[in-house]
Amino acid sequence: MRRIKHAEIEARRFLAEHRLSLPLNLEEVAKLLDTKITYASFQGDGAILYKGNKYNLIIANKNQELGQLRFNIAHEISHCLLKHEGTFFHTHPGNDKPIYEKCADTCASELLIPRLELKRKYPLFNGDVKKLKKHFMVSEKAMVTKLQILNLSYTNTFYR
Image 1 (cartoon, rainbow, N blue to C red):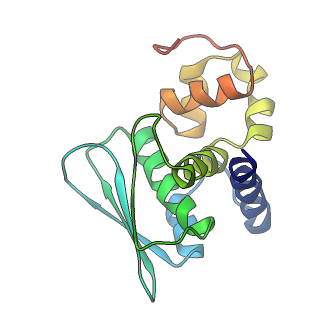
Image 2 (image 1 turned 135 degrees about the vertical axis):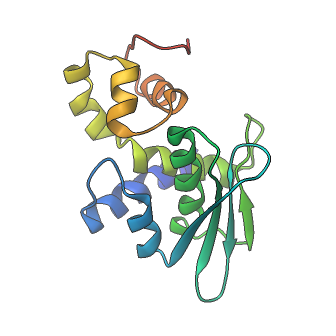
Protein backbone atom coordinates (compact mmCIF):
# COMPACT_ATOMS: atom_id res chain seq x y z
CA MET A 1 0.00 0.00 0.00
CA ARG A 2 2.86 2.37 0.82
CA ARG A 3 4.43 1.85 -2.63
CA ILE A 4 1.12 2.60 -4.33
CA LYS A 5 0.74 5.84 -2.35
CA HIS A 6 4.33 6.74 -3.29
CA ALA A 7 3.43 6.29 -6.99
CA GLU A 8 0.58 8.77 -6.64
CA ILE A 9 2.78 11.29 -4.81
CA GLU A 10 5.52 10.92 -7.43
CA ALA A 11 3.02 11.72 -10.21
CA ARG A 12 1.90 14.86 -8.36
CA ARG A 13 5.50 15.93 -7.79
CA PHE A 14 6.33 15.46 -11.48
CA LEU A 15 3.30 17.46 -12.65
CA ALA A 16 4.11 20.31 -10.26
CA GLU A 17 7.84 20.33 -11.01
CA HIS A 18 7.28 20.59 -14.76
CA ARG A 19 4.16 22.78 -14.53
CA LEU A 20 2.30 20.55 -16.97
CA SER A 21 -1.20 21.49 -18.02
CA LEU A 22 -4.20 19.25 -18.61
CA PRO A 23 -5.15 17.33 -20.58
CA LEU A 24 -1.63 16.03 -20.32
CA ASN A 25 0.49 16.06 -23.47
CA LEU A 26 2.03 12.58 -23.31
CA GLU A 27 4.59 13.30 -26.03
CA GLU A 28 5.90 16.19 -23.90
CA VAL A 29 6.04 14.02 -20.79
CA ALA A 30 7.83 11.24 -22.66
CA LYS A 31 10.42 13.70 -23.95
CA LEU A 32 11.11 14.91 -20.38
CA LEU A 33 11.88 11.28 -19.46
CA ASP A 34 14.09 10.54 -22.53
CA THR A 35 11.37 8.35 -23.95
CA LYS A 36 10.07 8.08 -27.50
CA ILE A 37 6.55 6.98 -28.39
CA THR A 38 5.76 5.15 -31.60
CA TYR A 39 2.48 3.66 -32.80
CA ALA A 40 1.88 0.32 -34.49
CA SER A 41 -0.89 -2.17 -35.14
CA PHE A 42 -0.79 -5.36 -33.11
CA GLN A 43 -3.15 -7.81 -31.44
CA GLY A 44 -4.91 -6.66 -28.29
CA ASP A 45 -4.93 -3.41 -26.37
CA GLY A 46 -1.90 -2.07 -24.66
CA ALA A 47 1.58 -0.73 -25.05
CA ILE A 48 5.09 -2.02 -24.57
CA LEU A 49 8.04 -0.22 -22.99
CA TYR A 50 11.64 -0.98 -23.86
CA LYS A 51 14.13 0.68 -21.52
CA GLY A 52 17.35 1.26 -23.44
CA ASN A 53 20.73 2.77 -22.64
CA LYS A 54 20.26 6.04 -24.55
CA TYR A 55 16.50 6.38 -24.49
CA ASN A 56 13.33 4.43 -23.74
CA LEU A 57 10.83 3.38 -26.39
CA ILE A 58 7.08 2.94 -25.98
CA ILE A 59 5.26 1.08 -28.73
CA ALA A 60 1.51 1.65 -28.46
CA ASN A 61 -1.29 -0.08 -30.34
CA LYS A 62 -2.80 2.68 -32.45
CA ASN A 63 -6.06 0.74 -32.85
CA GLN A 64 -7.28 1.53 -29.32
CA GLU A 65 -9.91 4.04 -28.26
CA LEU A 66 -8.14 7.35 -27.52
CA GLY A 67 -8.74 7.29 -23.76
CA GLN A 68 -7.45 3.72 -23.44
CA LEU A 69 -4.47 4.52 -25.65
CA ARG A 70 -3.58 7.52 -23.48
CA PHE A 71 -3.86 5.47 -20.28
CA ASN A 72 -1.68 2.68 -21.65
CA ILE A 73 1.00 5.16 -22.73
CA ALA A 74 0.81 6.93 -19.35
CA HIS A 75 1.15 3.53 -17.67
CA GLU A 76 4.39 2.80 -19.53
CA ILE A 77 5.66 6.34 -18.90
CA SER A 78 4.97 5.69 -15.21
CA HIS A 79 7.43 2.78 -15.22
CA CYS A 80 10.10 5.29 -16.32
CA LEU A 81 9.01 7.93 -13.84
CA LEU A 82 9.00 5.43 -10.97
CA LYS A 83 12.38 4.05 -12.09
CA HIS A 84 11.18 0.46 -12.21
CA GLU A 85 14.00 -1.99 -12.90
CA GLY A 86 13.84 -4.14 -16.00
CA THR A 87 14.17 -3.86 -19.76
CA PHE A 88 10.68 -4.73 -21.03
CA PHE A 89 7.28 -3.84 -19.59
CA HIS A 90 3.85 -4.31 -21.10
CA THR A 91 0.34 -3.45 -20.03
CA HIS A 92 -1.19 -6.13 -17.77
CA PRO A 93 -5.00 -6.30 -17.97
CA GLY A 94 -7.01 -7.64 -15.07
CA ASN A 95 -6.72 -7.50 -11.30
CA ASP A 96 -4.00 -10.10 -10.71
CA LYS A 97 -1.04 -7.76 -11.21
CA PRO A 98 2.37 -7.52 -9.60
CA ILE A 99 2.82 -4.54 -7.26
CA TYR A 100 4.97 -2.60 -9.75
CA GLU A 101 2.11 -2.81 -12.28
CA LYS A 102 -0.39 -1.54 -9.71
CA CYS A 103 1.99 1.33 -8.95
CA ALA A 104 2.26 2.17 -12.66
CA ASP A 105 -1.57 2.17 -12.92
CA THR A 106 -1.86 4.49 -9.92
CA CYS A 107 0.81 6.84 -11.25
CA ALA A 108 -0.79 6.90 -14.72
CA SER A 109 -4.19 7.68 -13.22
CA GLU A 110 -2.78 10.56 -11.20
CA LEU A 111 -0.87 11.92 -14.21
CA LEU A 112 -3.97 11.91 -16.42
CA ILE A 113 -6.61 12.67 -13.76
CA PRO A 114 -4.97 14.46 -10.83
CA ARG A 115 -7.24 14.11 -7.81
CA LEU A 116 -7.19 17.82 -6.91
CA GLU A 117 -8.05 18.85 -10.46
CA LEU A 118 -10.83 16.25 -10.62
CA LYS A 119 -12.29 17.57 -7.36
CA ARG A 120 -12.24 21.10 -8.85
CA LYS A 121 -13.89 20.06 -12.12
CA TYR A 122 -16.33 17.54 -10.63
CA PRO A 123 -19.01 20.10 -9.61
CA LEU A 124 -18.77 21.91 -12.96
CA PHE A 125 -19.74 18.70 -14.74
CA ASN A 126 -22.21 17.49 -12.04
CA GLY A 127 -20.45 14.12 -11.84
CA ASP A 128 -21.25 13.36 -15.50
CA VAL A 129 -18.70 10.71 -16.47
CA LYS A 130 -18.98 11.31 -20.21
CA LYS A 131 -18.23 15.03 -19.80
CA LEU A 132 -15.41 14.42 -17.31
CA LYS A 133 -13.76 11.77 -19.50
CA LYS A 134 -13.91 14.11 -22.47
CA HIS A 135 -12.37 16.95 -20.46
CA PHE A 136 -9.47 14.80 -19.18
CA MET A 137 -9.20 12.77 -22.44
CA VAL A 138 -9.38 9.41 -20.68
CA SER A 139 -11.49 6.30 -21.02
CA GLU A 140 -14.81 5.98 -19.28
CA LYS A 141 -13.43 3.09 -17.23
CA ALA A 142 -10.45 5.18 -16.02
CA MET A 143 -12.76 8.02 -15.01
CA VAL A 144 -15.20 5.77 -13.16
CA THR A 145 -12.32 4.05 -11.35
CA LYS A 146 -10.89 7.40 -10.19
CA LEU A 147 -14.33 8.65 -9.07
CA GLN A 148 -14.83 5.43 -7.08
CA ILE A 149 -11.41 5.81 -5.42
CA LEU A 150 -12.38 9.34 -4.37
CA ASN A 151 -15.88 8.23 -3.27
CA LEU A 152 -17.53 10.69 -5.65
CA SER A 153 -20.94 9.83 -7.06
CA TYR A 154 -21.33 9.86 -10.81
CA THR A 155 -23.88 9.56 -13.62
CA ASN A 156 -24.13 8.86 -17.34
CA THR A 157 -21.94 5.80 -17.63
CA PHE A 158 -21.98 2.23 -18.80
CA TYR A 159 -19.92 1.15 -15.74
CA ARG A 160 -21.56 0.60 -12.34
